[in-house]
Length: 168
Image 1 (spheres, one colour):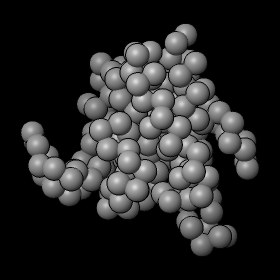
Image 2 (cartoon, rainbow, N blue to C red):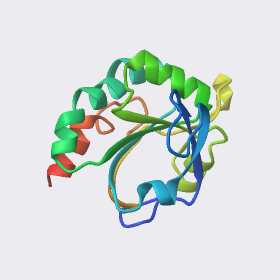
Image 3 (cartoon, helix red, strand yellow):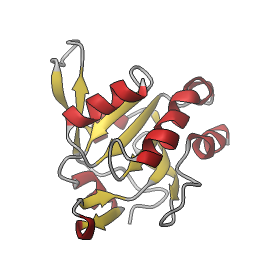
Image 4 (spheres, one colour):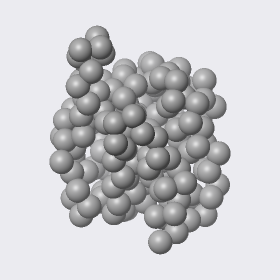
């Protein structure tokens, strides 16, 4: 399992872009984790799946709500990673009004989750391999803090925990 001091896995996530911009087209775009995290402080949180009740009611909204405070504490970007495709993550971003605040990054094949060792096997429930619910503060591609939820708990993957850690 990934731990404090480790470098983020060299994987590619996907992000749905609503607007064509520098180097990105409308639709799914590849995000090289190493390049995207280099030189930045990132509040990264991972969830088992988009549109799940607790994640939609508590987790994503807490990061949207605390966006300004996280930025003031030195966080450059907020990433939400989930084992879904980029289209679903884009729809979830619209639903959560996360645009411009939280990057909704798709880990469609669970490559990032597997590489971190933070997987959740929900095949018995018909949902396949997912990500555990966790948060981490990442500085220049290295894990500065890691908060992994206990099963059925929703205590340490929220924005308040990361905000306290970013403030130091």
